[in-house]
Image (cartoon, rainbow, N blue to C red):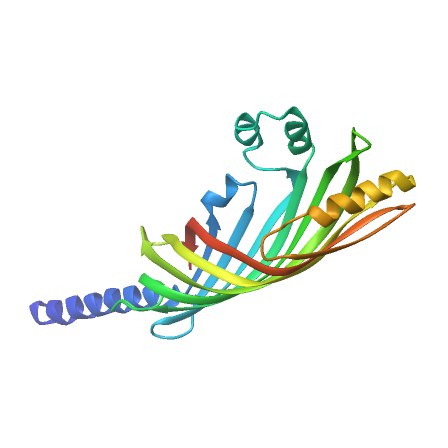
Length: 244
């Protein structure tokens, strides 16, 4: 009987070790949600999968239903102009984006653990509705404009990921600068008098958006502002994830 105890214990230990290794090996997938994005009215969900010893691939979907701008009250509190406050009050924005990413983990634990450097691209669509204010013969007027801007950017992400429990992880997107291009327009359909058309054209001529080219079409039926040029941004966030 005693001779059988040692082999049985060895078998149990080996099976436990193999089960643990199998469990760790099988957890190559993580589904995450960006907690910080929720404060900006964005729902940001990422799926990541280990495909090599130190390499993983990920895909992110971000959605912001069209609504008022985030932190609207805080922004309005810094503005003294009632007209500008009223304009901000009526602005509505939304967006949808998809971001594929490849990550390289530099630590000894390999993929899904520790510090990483990632390369990513983001395809995004931004929608907006706003009252565009202008002055016609000394009278303040506005035209309701809406439209969308499509962007394509590429960038580098620096971050770190930790395993907090058997199936829980924390992913910190430390810094992800990105740069690319944009193309879109804002359109307002409303009857315009010749005087209003000239005033709007003058406003659009003076419009200065840094690094962005604008052009316009103004006629008796309304106005369209075309936007084209560079687009830059910074990705950051703190994600809680479930690994499996």
